[in-house]
Image (tube, rainbow, N blue to C red; front, side):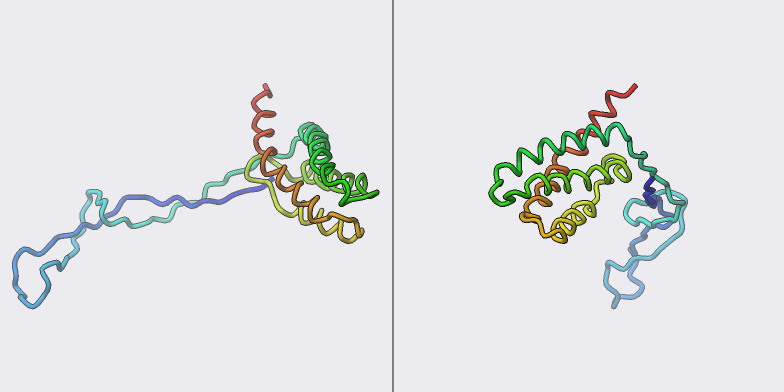
Length: 164
């Protein structure tokens, strides 16, 4: 479960400006300002006040969503990568399996809805594919990331709008 802390700043000030109308000191510019305490709000001078942090707690991952989305991811990635099948050669299924496995693990353990899509699973994909010396590692990792950016948060919203 991820937690986001955000400060709140108040837009209320206890100071106002008074412009000098008498010229006791002719050498001073006419725009000299003096401060006077007041209890009325001043929207010209904003003084931030410290307030306690508010916590936003992201929802926990949903295992059923992770399974459903992993299947959808595999199908869509297979269609996308099949267009470049000659890049992968006989390792096409191995590349697809590796990407699907790492993406599914991320969904099951870490993804908690919009705002929680991380780049780490896709860098892990790239590293894993390169360590196994599989062809097309960059292409597969990039296609996986683009698919997730375009569809994952939207699918999460749809999934949760159907829930009772």
